[in-house]
Length: 337
Image 1: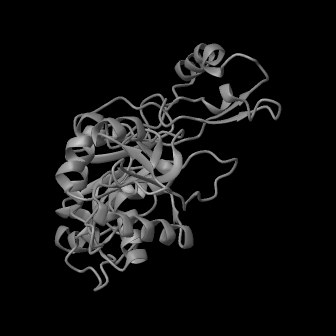
Image 2: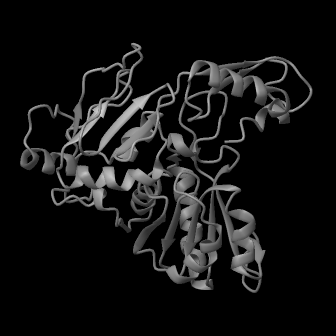
């Protein structure tokens, strides 16, 4: 999942002198109208409430960097230092420059920070990286609204043909049971994308490589079954809920069916070729008061507990340190994922 150690601020790279006025408009706009970070990119702040992105750190080439900015010489070297530090990034300039600077740093959609690209005139706001899981598409729409610009979103599930005129997709969360493929297709296209549905519910895909095929099934209106005994996954018009099947030992187990399926549970499920496993967080760890970093003395008991109970290791558990240690650097740095 996204790093919880990023500063909840937007790093803005003004790549030309003509980009500075827009950078200052963006700084003032986000300060007046902050953007709430999505759950996947939200750092722990002592609670579950939204964390607002209201601060902009401006970076500009040294030859014209203003007094309120941070000067740099080479954008590639700079982004190599800042990409993992900030919750979101915005390049004001050519998309190609941003792509070349970011390419060596991209790791996975579950960890990459959202990146926007804006033209210096402030007409378009492009969602370039981490549009769904990191909230890049939502951030692009928010920044476009702040600046009076047009958000450029290219994600297929966000570009349904029945979008409203202002670009906000219509949502339909009605039941899907009994719908034919033709009936389910348009509704599924208008509903939230599956990864957004899971992200906002606090759930974590385990088989990220199978997510595109499952999302494609939803977009194309093909049958997509959901095995979710915990009812942790919110209703979606494209998901057909299955009964809570169990294996011969009485343990909950997804059935053997043809075609793609989403299986959500807090237990560790064995992988299957067409099944997207989704981890349901149900584990809370209580940490005592130790001076050494928690990962030094917690790793083995934690792993033993998972093996003994069959709990899934994803997503990372909620953890409750003692009051005395909750603000110490070792505790704040754990869990590392």
